[in-house]
Image (cartoon, rainbow, N blue to C red; front, side, top):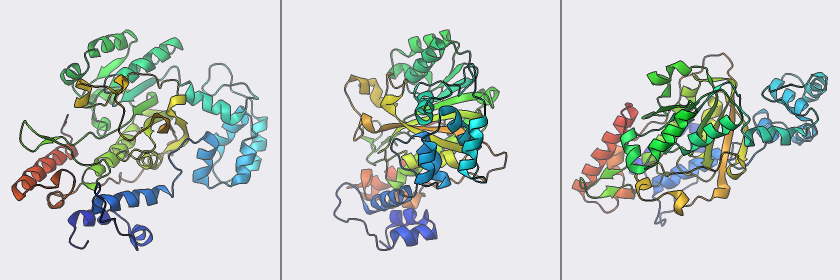
Length: 420
């Protein structure tokens, strides 16, 4: 593999420890007809990293809490006996300096929350079950604004607005789309009616919102530290559509896991959570729905990006157990003009039972964070050297033309230029 430029690009993104621990003794399957050696290396590395994390499957509040603190089964047994009031106190105050048993004793002396306070529940309700109901039933701060990002046809934002209206909330819903209104009208004939109903609930609707650049979007400046809840369902950096022959052949050709395009998905999560720090209130929740088997925006990208930006992972909920899961889902790209998932066209290689809602709470420390570590995109030489995906079977002239188009698109994306 010494001469394989794309494999070198993958390995240059590793630390020395990862090279020694994960790549020594590993070689990609040269007979794999679906994925080339660079993609196999990238997937192997991602899976090795994920084995060190909390996993992408359903996880209740106690298991999610124990993982970063490395608490053993004894702590698990102790916490599962606690009432909701006592468990919430332990989750809120534990910082690793005092024994867990001492905090449990202190929790018993604390009075319960009352009235409509966030977290109020019957004092003796079983802790883990009551805690899970808050996130499944979406009992968020009734006075704070809530934001929805990356909502292709605004179906989820409308679902949330109806939910909040039924609960008597006074906080607004801020609904955003990545595409402009003209494109949305081409794909979703119902979009104007959806916007009209959203506005009847006093919601704000913004188009052409790039989730990697929300911190510098002037339209969102008024919402700094005002969001009590944020939602981003099934994030994706978008397919790299290009024309091999302008106006004729549409080329994608890469799996989302391919290193030529996968950096876009990982950076999407890193920049999204870094930008959210300016808008979410301390204690506010962020929920990102995704399939635990997704190979584009992997679950580890979601959890890792959140935790590194001080959004603590508090629970992973099966999507079908979430009260807001019933809405008109869409692909979020040009396919929606002719077909929708709700019309029987399912997502490739993803089953609804594997869809999860990764749930986080913003717990800022007040300390300055280091610069966000992003994944560098492949340079032009790396793209041109690719021999699989859409490059497979192309001649030299076609390879050069396709490499130029992809490189130009990636440069635009990195520069903040909107690419629909």
